[in-house]
Image 1 (cartoon, rainbow, N blue to C red):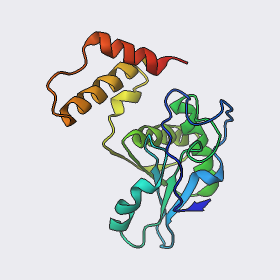
Image 2 (image 1 turned 30 degrees about the vertical axis):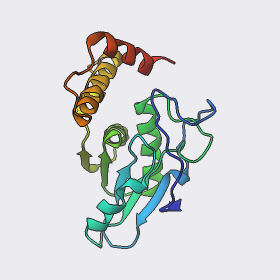
Image 3 (image 1 turned 90 degrees about the horizontal axis):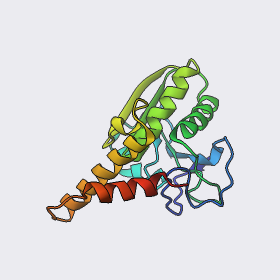
Image 4 (image 1 turned 90 degrees about the vertical axis):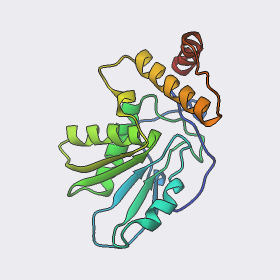
Length: 193
């Protein structure tokens, strides 16, 4: 486990990251970053966004009650040659095992910002499937429809690309959003191995 370390950013999409293609099912203890220790409450686990770093939560942690420990989950690809997980479900299962080993008793409290919300949801599902109680899953700026299992990977990827393109165009002050052909190309790239 680390304490508040920074690392190189990584965007993990469809199993791709800064890694060398090597992948294993586990999440190493180095994925855990203590953002605040102490306190007598169960910790709040904060899931990395697409950049892979847990330190994005430093300002949020400063605003939380002083007796609430906070532990970040940082991408295993953020500062190593390890590849990211091939699916969000595989990531959730690995993180569920890691959190269960770290916090074997009592309910768990999970929070994810942006892409980290999907990791938090997938981890909560794996924890509950293993019989663990999840007392909180908080999503900040995450759209749970992106990981809806009733949608095909293509539908999820198209939804992601449509929302990202719309956000980029709005943020840049442009009026035109990506058309269907552009979305199809971006979706194919996102799903391409």
